[in-house]
Length: 196
Image (cartoon, rainbow, N blue to C red):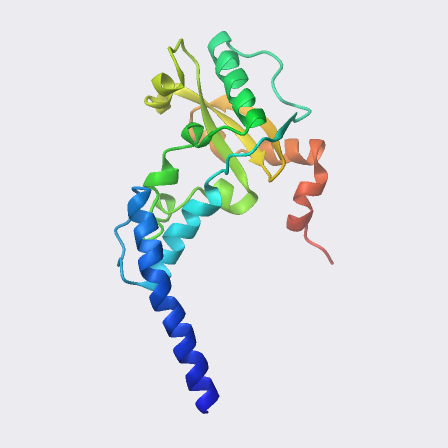
């Protein structure tokens, strides 16, 4: 009985020491968080949701899905070329992600405001690319609704570009993205396969 109490005290001590660390990280990154800032579960979920979706800066090889569009609008192609170059050089590509990386809040009452579900379910990121002329990437990233989406899988060593679609909700959870992954890199979907 004493060893169980000792174990529980150690676990509680660990939780108590992690809360201020995660709370400070949430504040440093200016993440939206409306939950209980002293609650271990809430601050941990918020920090980990951000940390898992955040793409570390390191050089990666870039691969294109078999069905990746061959023809793009000039400005979209220009922005894609810039993004691909940043991926290959290991530069920061997080600004191209949805701003929900910062604004989603795991403590939010509405589930659609908690996390990026396409990423949570299948590890598929969506990046924003312009459809119109732009001066630099901050120009179109500040007006994301007029952009298109680039769907991609980012692993430790490579990036798999899946598709580019218009920025509309009907395109977001389109199963054709999974079909494209299966046709190009079937091993990625192996963990999701139902087995007898």
